[in-house]
Length: 132
Image (cartoon, rainbow, N blue to C red; front, side, top):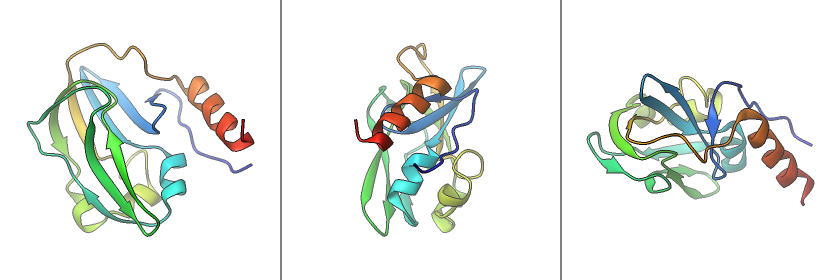
């Protein structure tokens, strides 16, 4: 079974996004599991700053040598910042999915209910990896 980095203190979605919530702002990206599944990321279509999104809505796409994958918003709110470095360095998501490879920041409009804790996300990955 492969080892995946799953930092504690973050929240996760079943679609493999992560969010770090501080003072009503969520920093969002895709998980280590997601980036390893996609392989080498070659392009990121970033969301528009100022856009209002609902939890579970497609916010942007990530393109790898294997596939194009949708990125979903883990929360409802307004996009307040994007990681413009990803335009020229999309591979930051591969090398540093939880820090330099963040994708967007969202001003949160509602609670984080329904997100997975570190332990719950780890159980989800273990279940996927074991084929159950």
